[in-house]
Length: 113
Length: 114
Image: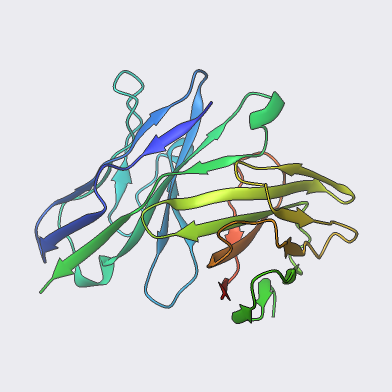
């Protein structure tokens, strides 16, 4: 079974402060991990994926297999980063997990001016 | 205008009635998905389809049914057997069935059953 946990439902920071949204996962194989974001009145959309090792809008996330984590980080938060963030996992094995994306519970980030 | 559409935006039904939510995409994507979004529970997968005329149950399929007769369409029926149908429903599609492919989401349908 695959499972994603985001321990913080709400996270508040001030503009310019560093921000870290936590994500832990459980999966027996080698997972593929993603962060999706939902801004106010917009659709849920992909922010970044670990296989791309990219930085999007200043956000980065590193897969730590030892700690089974995929935390999302940004050194200097901006007000426009306020949104709901979801961590998601895709198992790359076949069988029942094929094609499935498992989401965490989500973290609402609020960046205050 | 390409993308994935869901209709209607808001839907109200009486308890005991079945209701069908529409999801259409013109992205030529093979795979389509239905999720339910509840506060504090994130997105939970209801059903997904990797190709036309084929679909699989997700994590919370009980009380729901789907069909995939056309590549572009993946309607979800919420039956009277679903115990807590009031929720926000999201449809998504991806180019290929593998989970690594980006999923594109629709705007959602908020269903209220009283």
